[in-house]
Length: 450
Image (cartoon, rainbow, N blue to C red; front, top):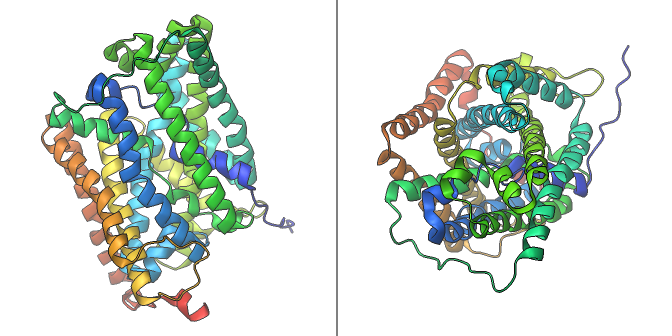
């Protein structure tokens, strides 16, 4: 008989690295921002969007996770607050959006690897599949190897940008000529894509709670780690866009050649190569961290007899959801052919719908269980929470409206995202048809044990 090891847990420093890669993984993907927003609006959008889009999500995650630090995270929160149906919606939408999200990163890995060996673009699909299944193997080994790997890759990502910033400010003389912030002259469709670009580079704070039972002292660890990761992400994004603007690179060159081109301008070819290598590390780190979070949700839903029971099979040695990891990897293997622009719109649109259920759950639980134990509590009343939730909703619908006023390709991507959202009700009806006992709900079950 195989000996079962005690479940190993990660510490805050490793959790910061996992969160960093789940949400960001570096500024890769921000390159089109200057093209969409222009030099006067780029920094303005980059600073305001995270305040409206990310900060409410972070506070919601911290309060809900302090109430229920359990495996399954956001799925469990919504299920207990709104019932099985909406809990399924949450899990289903997040599962689908993450497949879209994961499909982006193997392609980015090949793109940055081709900076050194252009011929690799001819072998994009085989290399993407190697990335997918190597990350699957790493996740099967457990959260501690993922945490250690994310910590190592985090250093690889950050060091080249630290060198870039140091060299830029060391050689830059005089005051920084920061362009005057202004939205004047930015078309609505371009503004929408700028929003999507920043939103995509800053989403996923709720994903980091799906493995809370695998974190040491989860309430305190998440509080410290999430705020640390948020500060790191915002500072990194601000500095790289600022340095890119002041380096003299044109928006089109930045969009086509990426931040390695900025490194080559400031430090020479060696720094450009170092940043390209960091892009490869970022792609691997983000993929492994996001797969870690999404693979836990279908396993929990299978445990509750909502999804097929085969998905709850764990590895006999490492106690990881091996069946769920394999299924996720199979689906992503089929999606790596999708174009980046379509994936971006679908990703953010589906993710935002799931996030809205978390805001509703937060408000609902404040109303029905005001005295439930909350080690962390947002210092707002019900009205304040409603206003807070309205801020990311405003950003979401402005971006979506802009997509519908953009190119034909963007319109079809937005329509497909809406179809994906609608699929949740269809699948839920199938579940009720085969398993009618799920029609009954046990709301606020946590309250009974509080």
